[in-house]
Image 1 (cartoon, rainbow, N blue to C red):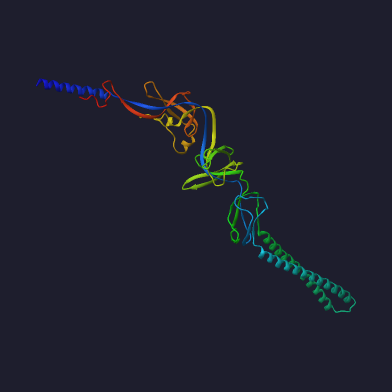
Image 2 (image 1 turned 30 degrees about the horizontal axis):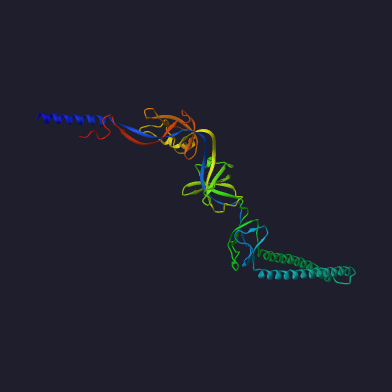
Length: 400
């Protein structure tokens, strides 16, 4: 009986000792750190847009008819005034001849009216002399005067008719000239929308026959920038971008225009930013999608800390300063003081108050704070392990 009691006492003592050391076990955290570096930092705004020619002209027609011949095709280089298409001119030639005949007839009527005026004036002057001598009655003189006034009125009507018919003649000639479609600018044909034999109708809306890019060596990108970032942009800022066609190449440009008109899509407000691009080698083509990075600030030889260091917070830690919210938070984004943590000698995070400046995707400028180059700041908690108090490595205590 005493043996069983002794054995039970030993077992209870072992359990008590195991529980004591198990309760004394303290968690040990493992952290990932990153060094404070010195170098250049570039702040930028990202956006997307499509490439297009700076000046693109849509060439239409002012007369209706059938396309008789095409003198230009896709990618054709054209000069200003060069014929690029011909509409069947037969109908317009007939209209020119008809109006020309009307014009000649009106001119003949004008000459006839002039002769009538001369005759009426001569008769009136003769009757004026005869009435002085009492040879003719007053009524004869009045009749001659009336005939002269009527002839003068007919002359004015004939002159007006000549002007009217001459206008119709000029219009017919102009319409005939319009049957030859000419390029309004020097450039490259990027689109052709008609074929030989196709009928085009210039009625309420002028049809587009060709699209001509005036100069593909100079292009532009129309990007949409969010309202939260538009305040950081200025005209003349440098831009770099990539296109899917040349993923290994990076192209450059600069901001030419920031348009004030907002674009609102599903309550999202954006603004159009126009970027000019040099395309001397003609690698870039209209319509390509550009992934744009607009440089808003650049600083050399400054201390940089990883952005993840500001997001790290030990369990139970509080911010040194309460962050503002909403628009105030965006306004003070570059001025607010925050905390980062160094790894202390006892493997515990030590808070350090810092003030940050400009930032890029992964790093921030260190404006102020008790940090120096090569200091290691905590960026992430990797794991938390339990360390034994000295009696075995098993977290469950000793086993019997």
